[in-house]
Amino acid sequence: MEKKRTRKRRYITGLDGVRTLAVLGVILYHLMPDRMRGGYLGVPVFFGISGYLITDHLRMEWEAKGKISLKAFYARRLKRLYPPLVFFLLTTTAYITLFQRNLLNNLKGAVTSALLYVNNWWQINQGMSYFERFTNESPFTHIWYLSVEAQNYLIWPLLFVLLMKVFKKREKIFLVVFIAALASALWMAIAFVPGADPTRVYYGTDTRIFSIWLGSAMAFLWPTSHLRSQIPQKAKQILNTVGIACLIILIASFFFLDAHYTFVYRGGMLLISLVSVLLIMVVAHPGASLNKWLSNPLFSYIGKRSYGIYLYQYPVMIFYEAKVKNIADNVWLHTLIEVILIVLIAEVTYQIIDKPLSRFDYSKTWSTVKGWFEKPLLTWKKAFLLPGIFLVVTALVGFIIAPSNHVTAEQKQMQEQILQNKKVAEESKKKAKEKETATSDSTAETTSSADAAHLAEIATEYGLSKEDAAAAAKLSFTAFGDSVMLGAAQNMKDLFPDVVVDANVNRQVYSSQDLIQKLADEDLLKDPVVIGLGTNGDFTETQFADFMKLLGDRKVYWLNVHAPSLRIQGVVNSALTKYASSYDNLTIIDWYSYSKDHSDWFYDDQVHLTPEGRIGYTKLLFETLSKK
Image (cartoon, rainbow, N blue to C red; front, side):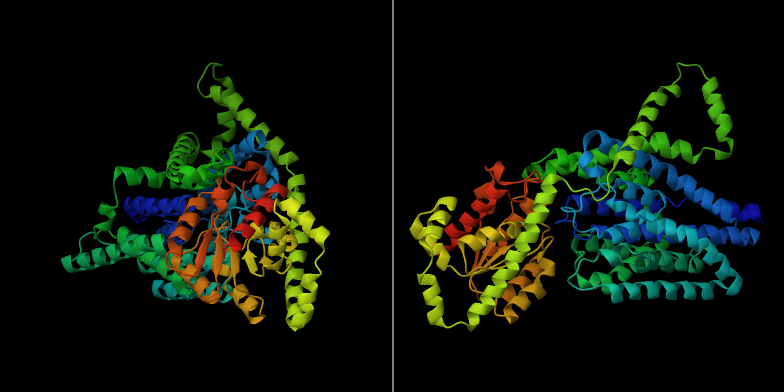
């Protein structure tokens, strides 16, 4: 009986096709965020596959033996996942140590948490954001996913045994697990804060485990060993229709379901997880056609290497884009190069790590090591000794010397500047409120008694005539933006004494509506308004329209983006040019063209402003606003 059930366990080739779909979605989401807005949804697909297959295997073992071997389960999981992870951490750390030491900062925490499978909670505790790569540059960002998986592997076999002993019947267990999954999805909906960065609910095991448990629940309802290949034609048609519909919904969501939609966290992720699990169930059914349709050499190749492709995607992107400073000038070419590099590295690691170690008998480790020393010196296995030692030693050196929360001189300067300019921005709002209560006569008197020497100084600093400096002092507007604009807050206040500045780091269009409304409620939203958003991420047409609606009929000047090291530069600037034709009150200030030949205006990131850059930025505002 045991042998009979064991033989029924089969490799479902079509699931490699589903894995291919998932990993391509995730990679293209990172490489082409403007086109694959929902590619992050490949993760719940992986979760669903994991939950379904792991539970199905546990259930088959329970049926065959009346128990499960926890030791064997954990050994299988570690044997499959841990060696590639350790090799990934070694190679990535070694590369950082040799070629990109700026990424050594906080490496100890990232690597240790990855090895212990708690990286998702470590990132949450560090205040990191999955959706903000510009200020969160790390080749380990994506490891959060493996931690959620591993934490489930730790607790699920224990829960499985408990459920089998308490409830016994598959239908009851399905119901319990399904309700638990819904509770997790509900907690995601409750914990999500609209307009805020969603990383906490995106990373949290408690708010993401529902995708895995939905797959686990369906494994009780849809066990592979009970599915028959010979089914009525009508049933086959229904299965195929459901499978195709799920496939279409999933692919469409990859293109259109932006990660910043409230719907995603209040039911959307649950819906996509259900669709994914339904697709997995259809593919797993031997009587349906989806398994055959999703089985081909290409999908098999990518699916078998999907773990390595997922592991190395972020390091390749981070390392490559650190060396290619003008990636925005030819996004398609660089994207293709990065994809090729990711696949090549995944192939190499699959051949030298994944395949050999997945078959390796760890109980014979000592005899294998002993036999290795007994082999002749000139053998291909010994040829890996020196590179291997060099890799390990280099990674260990990097790990040991890696600082924690280190701040470079440039970063310290920028942080001090930001803190100072935040005070300037707050002072500008305070002054504007005070002026509202002052009489028009006192305002005129203050303006007419402006210090001539100060005007002359300002004129010299900004390369303006005294008349232009005096004209700038009379301009009144609200400036709303991100850290680039914040960096120039003091300069704007010097040249435009009546400006209201509201700027902050990591600010994006999708999360700014409440801030704009607050300015309007406090009578601080002047006419015109200068907007400096887009450096931290692009935006959909709907998000842009909602933002512009809050500004009403005010004249709006929107600075486009100078960020040649970021692929979103062209995306944002093209979108702004396109949207401008739909709004009579919108003018695009071409900061990109104005600044692109002035590398001295920017720090090493080619985005944030040096003192010379702040002067250029502020002068451009005057040249634009004085033409109104």
